[in-house]
Image (tube, rainbow, N blue to C red; front, top):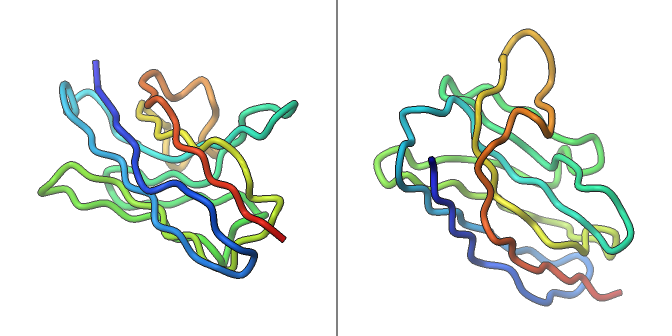
Length: 125
């Protein structure tokens, strides 16, 4: 099992930036992908971005060009740099880890078996 702890959420005005971090520990050898999901009130949890162990990335269309996912393998830390934030980006953001068949299909919710507790991101208009 992989333990994930997110940090970096908060309140920001539209057009601003935030950087989320996710510290991973435990059986990190068992995963090949780590990523960010988000869930707004009354909506389904959706993929924001994911990155594989070979650095293949996948982004939701709604964030492509504004958000950047990256990883620091030496410190087992995942980042999400969020720029040009919009009110519709408001949600709880979750870090997730699992196994994604890279090159076969985009990542799916069911690929991720370990989850963090979530961090709130609120973008005011």
